[in-house]
Amino acid sequence: MNKLTIEDIPIKGKRIFIRADFNVPLDSDLHITDDTRIRSTLPTINYAIDEGAIIILASHLDRPKGVDPRHSLAPVAKRLQRLLGKEVQFAPDCIGPQVQNMVARLKPGDVLLLENLRFHPGEKKNDEGFAKALADLGIDVYINDAFGTVHRSHASVTGITQFVKTKACGFLMKKEISYLEGAVANPARPFVAILGGAKVSGKIGVIENLGKKVDKVIIGGGMAYTFLKALGHDVGNSLVEDSMLDFAREIKEHAIERGIKFYLPVDCVVATSMDPAAETMRVPVQEIPKGWIGLDIGPASVHLFTEVLANAKTILWNGPMGVFEMDAYSRGTFAVAHAVANSYALTIVGGGETALAVHRAGESENISFISTGGGAALQLLEGKELPGLTVLPEKEG
Image (cartoon, rainbow, N blue to C red; front, side, top):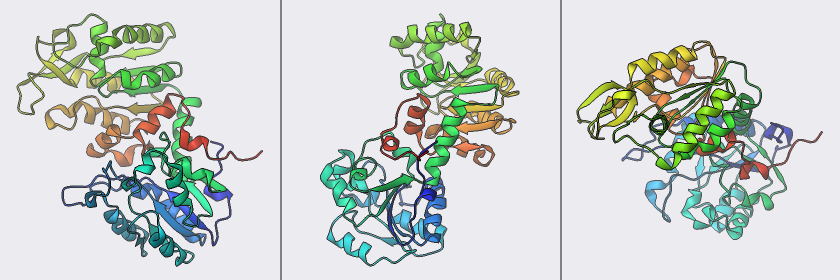
C-alpha cells in the first residue's frame, strides 16, 4: 500500500477527525457483545493521543431511520473510555453549534466521540452540505481508519475530503490493505481460497479474480449447491441460483484448465426444513433426498478440506460452510475454522459472517488476520477500486 498514513503527517496540536468503524453488535439491553472493531482502532487513537493531537471520532452504528436512541453511540463512548483508560467526551450530535462549542474547548490529548453519523440522511446520500458541516467542526486533519466503510461513497468517507486539505489512512486501514492486497498480489504458495456463503452471485468478482491467482479453491456454504446442480446432481430443495448454473460450470472448467485444484463438498447435512428442530441426516451429495435442504458440509467434506489445507502457505477464507448460526448446522464451519487456525499458513479471514464464525469457534486468536470489513474486503478481493481509498493521497516518490 502506498497511501499516506497518519505517521507521515504532523498532527501535534492539530484537530484530527478520525473516521472509525464502531458499528458493533448490541444486545437488547444495548450492551456491546463484541468490541473487536473498537479495539482494532485503538492503535490509531492512542498514537494521536501520544502525539498531542485533539481527537474527534466519528462513526455510524447500524441503519437507523432518523434519530433513534437504540442506535446511539453512547455505549461505544463508555467502552472506549475503559479501553483507553481516559475520559472520552460524548457529543449529542455530530454537527451544529453545540458540537462546534465542544470541539472548541478540547485540548491536546482530549478525545470526543460524535453521535451516530447516520442519524442524518445526508451521511448516506453523501450530501455536500452535511460533509461541509462535519469539516466545519474546525478539522485540520482527516484520518480514515474505517476499512468497513471504504466501499461506500458517504459524506464522512468521501465527501468530507473535499473540505479538509490534509488527509491520510489510519493504522487499521494500512493493515487491512497490506494483508488483503498482499495475499492476492504476492502470496506464499500453495495459496488456497475457501469461498462459502449463500450465493454465487454475491461472489462472482471474487471467484473470477482469485481464480487466476490461487492454487486450490474450496467451495462450501449455500453456493456449493449451485455448483453441484451445475454438475448434474439433484440437490433437493437446497439453495440454488439457476441463473448461475452456466457460470458455475465455466468457473470449474476454467480452473481445471489452468491447473487449479477445485474442491466441492462430498457429503452434507440435510434437513426437511430450516427449522432448528427439523429432522436431519448426513448424506453423500449424490443422495440428497427430494424436498430436503442442504444446510452444512458433512464429516467427509471436513476431512477432505482439512487435507487440502494441510500444505497451504497462504489461506484466504470468505464465507461460512453452512447455516452456522444454528447449532445443528455449525459443525462444518467450526471444523474448517479449526483446520485454518491449526495450519502453518498465513491465514486471512474476510470480515462479516466469516469473522463471526471464527469468533464463535474460539479461534480468533489463532488467525493471522481477520478483516473488519465484509463488503469492503470483497470489493478489494474483486480487484475493484474503493471510493474511500481513492480520495486519500498517495505517498510521494
